Image (cartoon, rainbow, N blue to C red; front, side, top):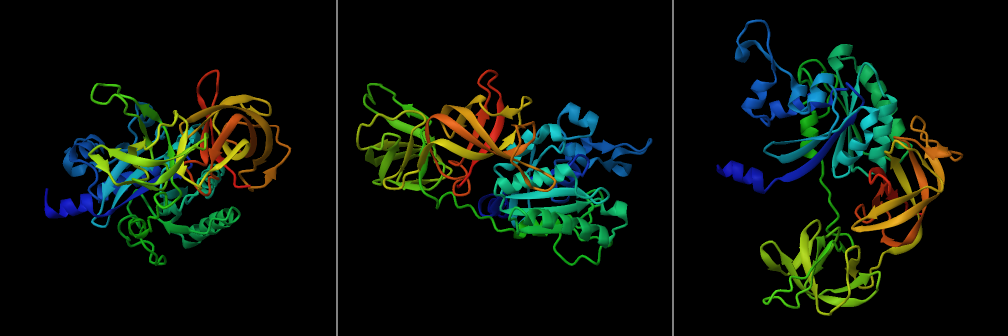
Length: 429
């Protein structure tokens, strides 16, 4: 490993990206372009996805099918669409990137929610010929609900509209107005041609009227702000470790992943829901004991006192409790084939805790085209988004999603099929 490689792997920031958009807007092609231009694709991968031209030698006269670098499933290659979320890795001297290529087809919106849930920034692809479509608006609205820090609108296929400035500006203005309705003001618009490479990693010669950064320059310059380690301490207990061996007859360690915040040896903590308090005796990690741990580390905590703690309980700093309620309202992205309607019963999985719940009411359904609230909606069909009131069998300790993504979100599980049918973000009020 060279000195440069060591610095690249150790010192520079990581940016998690997600690409979204409608079918055939060019997401896979864009990621392929970034992989090729940043040397993120291996030579055998490039050789495997080259298109042959007649009898000419492959290395000399073939073109790379950029989309094939990310479309890994046979069904994806056959249909020319993305079905599953594909993760790709590349780097520049300034930053490392993990990019999720999400499906554009409405049927696979659930996969898009999964890919976007952990990203720091999103690239919204729009075909310059087709403009802003309903699926584009659906994805943009979901990104807004997820609290995505940075949104980049990449107006693709500019080569097919003769690099027309007016076409680009019309799409930019329409999507900016749509985002403004839900309070999104950090929106960057860039005209690109993913196939030819214009304004992706190099400026090209066809759009001198655009004076902003290229897409790659923009990605390198984005501020990566991650506040989960400075947020209030939240530790959902996943497993209680009781070896009960001659060496460790009385050992009791509480294992899990720190959802947010930082904890130190000696900190006073409260156990929820019991409300009992103790102090941190040990913080045990993979490399042994430590004096502190922070999100999103997985660790084992031991306490000074013997307290009955089980999976689903949560440790927080004393005096810094969460809200507890049996009745919660959340913005729900519905993914199930069977619609959600009032009085139906489900299982809600919140952090490491599972609780039975009933739909008390559908407060409203969001009209994706206008973002207006349809308050007389009787159900949420697949891919609908709306605000739903739930009544839980027992209280859950939670934050609002806007304050803490980890403790403010949950998934909805069909109790009969055990399928995940929805994702919820708990409302602040």
